[in-house]
Image 1: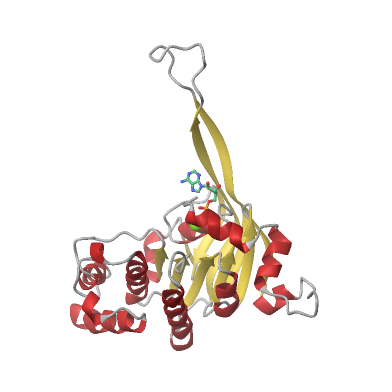
Image 2: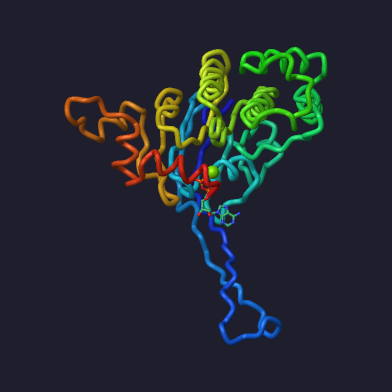
Length: 285
Ligand SMILES: Nc1ncnc2c1ncn2[C@@H]1O[C@H](COP(=O)(O)OP(=O)(O)O)[C@@H](O)[C@H]1O
Ligand SMILES: [Mg+2]
């Protein structure tokens, strides 16, 4: 088995952003169609990344820096303009089906059948992945229990659950099929502190007990510090630093005798503060 979970070579991804131009003042409401302005946005600028099997690898970056694009490329949802991505030796473009069997993605915008319960949604996912119900049922209950979801919620419609609880079900679904590469796109964004801890503890535990590799994006500095073996800080589509949490902290000298935190590193390297990222995220940008 290939010991490299994720191998990214010079990957570039551009999007076209379309914007409607304002209507000229002299134009009547009916006569002139508004022009559409097209603008190229380079979301990832020739990224190189090598994640060995078994690592929890964090991608930290401000909003719009390219984190989700990276995750979506690794999960075959997007194709790169140039460069290559391989998951355990399988090219995402040439061999997407092999890649899909090895990965699972959890994102903040997870979709569910809202009228159905967590158990029903997870059973559906299990069936899609060819997991027998007799195996899936105890496994999903165990995962949901470990994530701190109460048994009483297992059978109620998802639409009656809080966003935090729905997010936990999304995480449970991600782990249900024991993917060997788990792609977690901001799995704890928007969760209350307690739920956040539950999800973090679960990722930590999985890391200890399973052979899984985890690629995790977050804008929570402390989370990255605590959970990740190595962290890449990305800004404006480029990796601007990559090291272990301790290694990154050596980049910024401590001030007033206080230990350097991951937040200090982030602010120093990107010029953004942690509050910026949180606030922007709450606005849904
Ligand atoms: N489907 C898309 N169409 C147009 N622009 C996009 C699309 N997806 C992402 N972008 C742009 O690419 C950049 C990176 O986005 P994204 O990867 O979502 O960042 P992050 O997850 O770090 O917040 C942003 O400028 C964003 O607006
Ligand atoms: Mg994102």
